[in-house]
Image (cartoon, rainbow, N blue to C red; front, top):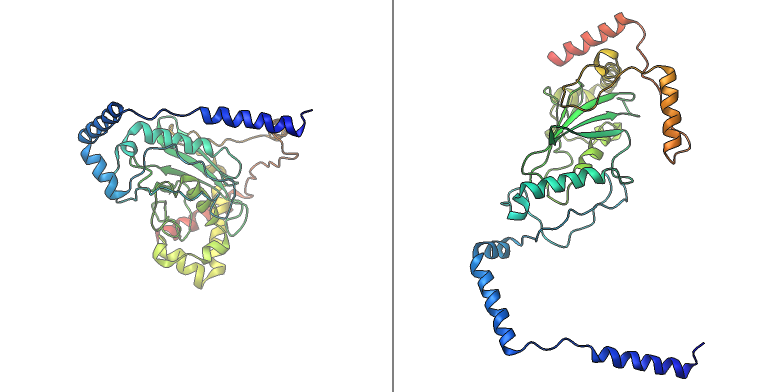
Length: 320
């Protein structure tokens, strides 16, 4: 063991060694070379330099991995220290590169596998033919749409992330934010879409949240694509709840749930026997850290005539 005197001697020698290491000062000729190189780079890209100075455009960087702290709108994203382009800002070369945007999109999808990044009950898979088309399924566990299975597609524009994706539900429903064409309104949450502040996982959390009764109460009429559903929720809540329940039942019926999707949609639903269900449950229990995995087969609604009447009533309402 070193004595205090030996320790001081050792520290003194280390300090002397560190002081002896220094970067040599550049000679006058080296300074002239660096100055000439800097001026040459400025002359080669004057427009890029001036545009960056005016707009405060950041240099290309790897997409930020969001925090794992979850809220009702998803994990909170750390605040950026650099300014980022808004939807109206022209894309700089690093953002306009198709390869860079594709890499960003793949990174976002990979990050959905991290804890708390993909909301419970929401599943998305990119189309094998197009990375800009993600198909999804939403399983609603509470609220007026409890028990529903809603299919949707997330259409990501070529100039994403400067422009927000578009969400379209493939399952018919009666919801204030869902238009007759299936488009889902993002205006309630994303009034101003900001690149690298808003991400796709924010949209997924928003979709899941807006099927809760408390979220339905917060919808502003200007953001409602279905004004009839909005008015009914506020003025005839019991009728709205009954229609929402009917939507949930129809979405899980065999004719809707097992309908053959387009070939580009990788999410397929098919009937499962009790033995297959138990086999899958055992497999999932062994392959995850969760002690218990609850799976249940979709129950077939009793009475074919009742389901047919339910569908007819719903169609009349949507077409009226």
